[in-house]
Amino acid sequence: MTPSAPAKWGLRGLAFGYLGLLLLAPVAMIFYKTFENGFGPPIEAMTSPEALHSIQLTLLMVAIAVPLNTVFGVACALLLVRSRWWANRWIDAIINLPFAISPIVVGLALFLLYGNDGWFGPTLTEWGFQVLFSWPGMVLASIFVSLPFVVREVVPVLHEIGTEQEQAASTLGANGWQTFWRVTLPAIRWGVAYGVVLTTARVLGEFGAVTIVSGRITGETETLPLFVGRAFEQFNEEAAYAGAIVLALLALTTLLLMSIGGRKAKASGAPVPSGGEVPVPISTTKEGS
Amino acid sequence: MGIAVEGAHKRFDDFQALDDVSIDVPDGSLTALLGPSGSGKSTLLRAIAGLEELDSGTVVINGKDATKTPAQKREVGFVFQHYAAFKHMTVFGNVAFGLKIRKWDKARIHDRVHELLRLVQLDGLAERYPDQLSGGQRQRMALARALAVEPQVLLLDEPFGALDAKVRKDLRTWLRRLHDEMHVTTIFVTHDQEEAMDVAEQLVVMNNGRVEQSGSADELYEHPANEFVMSFVGEVNRLGEHFVRPHDMEVVLDPDERTQEGLVQRIVTLGFEVRVELVLSDGTEVWAQLTRAELQRLELREGQIAYLRPVQAKSFNGSSPSIPNGASTPLGSHDGGDAGLPAAV
Image (cartoon, rainbow over all chains, first blue to last red; front, side, top):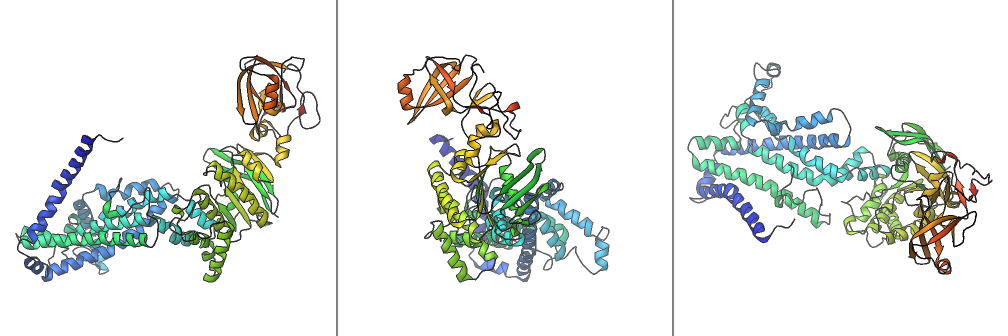
């Protein structure tokens, strides 16, 4: 259906107005507030030892949680799409749990599990592992909340590409491993990439679950979002805004790396993905995610 | 030698795709599996390739029992209807795939790929991506990819099904010539009887998961084993128990004891051939194939009464498509049921 001219402009106006008011205005406001008095104060705020430590810790979360969830996500998507198993529908449903559960509830659940009265807590303490109020617990929380993204992005792409290319590879003598690396993975790479971007964004920004399991120890278990939260609560607006900007920049960097990677692939002649595959992610929204 | 399938059964949930199928494909031959969709022909082909596991039965390729051999070790070349091109690889990469898996060295791969690209007339397009090729070019690339590893057998699953009519005709002529040069045992699946008769030396007609009949195009056309084969390998009219090819229907203006009365409903001129559609007194709709000259001699018009005289007819006792042998007609003719028709059918 082609909308009439007034309807078209109406829709455009609505889209732009909605985005402008609800997304662009708040982000612009933060930028404005941060650099209101020049670059000096925010740089100073972000070079304090606590701030630097929180950035480091946040990057550590990303460095651990994102690769783990990517490998798991791709493997799990392959299991769900390429095999027939009675448990698949259960796995499919369980994977969506993090979408359905509030992060704060995730934090509480981990707290109960790994606390001194929990199932795993006493045993792990005996072995000398400190999970709660330490980075391992925070990694667990980050993994939990960001788990579904890669799976949910890769599953539809796997459906889309079908099994014929993989079957062709096997008739040409490729074993399962060779088929995966040479045929399947290149074919789903955009789905994986988009899943990685979403996972990274989620881990970078996680607040609720990490708040509970970290204990919020300044300079020790404080990630960047927690740093921003504390700065805001202590009326240290300069640090809060500057921290928010750094978070936004980290997320933007991920997106940028992705689209540079994409453009490189295009420049080298690889075809632009079509259909259900995701084009350069920065310029599109994907349905069904 | 060649390919032999014995007693193949395959069931998908409540659908019996293969029901005790046995075929024999001579070494170096070009064989067509012909049948309507759902007849099991693709399943059989995929079972030969190892892409489908049989519930029971055996697959023997060049004298070796391959029933339990995985697809990757069967050394078959397989060509898919929708090409199954590796979209992220160039034409060169696609054709080189099997050779890289076999760890050939670069120079050898380069020579072999270009040799094949010349064979399929794609030399010069080596650096293109599949998206930049036409359907016919993609299918030729897929064929080159399958042939690159020098397979023992070549299997093609409706290879021309997704192409338009003109390209389809070119490609099948080309496939036959290629086969004449390569002599690799080839099986291809099609639902198009004309295509099967045009390309293949041997046809295997399948229906409902069973083999109805196999033989040369002439054998199937002249001596169909049953009603199904007769109607699948050519046009057919049904007159009671009897089956008559439209070109075996004589149209005359004077009745005698062997003719049947019919009302001419429609006359369609298709170039040299003329199609005359009639309705018999019992409501049966039939058509006769005449030449233009015959039509002019008869001066037939739509709406007039004419008389039909079947020159040659067949009947199959019980006329069930699953009965493998054509039974003789009530007239007791010797050659597989060919007979003139009695006056009243």
